[in-house]
Image (cartoon, rainbow, N blue to C red):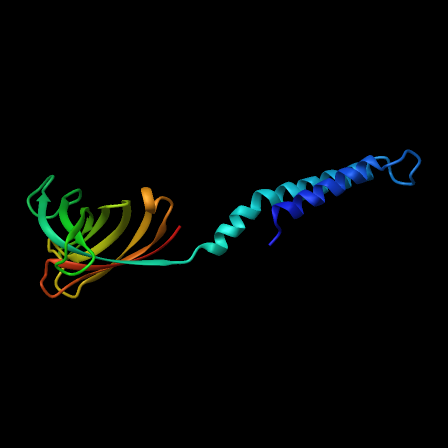
Length: 193
């Protein structure tokens, strides 16, 4: 990895070389200037890219396990009776680090029916988690029997799209599994900053 002092040393060498240029040197009149400009452009590119490269190497996946317990589930029927396009499924969830443990945050999900047939409906799902050191935002899709909620053992994945506070700039994936009690989920979040 090239450090900032090394890059600055290269820049100083280029500038010294330019100052030492003498009229009468057997070079094309612009060749030395072009080399200097190319060297400066390369050095500037390295300066700009080096923090990004360093951050990419430091990005190690982190895992967070959260348990969520369903507090409420509401269906907002926006049109015809039964599941139809635009119908909403709203959940409120208590979040904890252990199953049945102390509540450390609140989660909200909104599932919107975006497609359906006689047997199944597809929902676009948005999730928000309010945690002690920041908020997490996730999005995904679910495919369920028409108008139902998941059964125990159901597993689904969601994209972690960002957050605030400790979670600002994170991306990754969450796997949610509905546990045997039918109201608690084990959520495994794997993310990077």
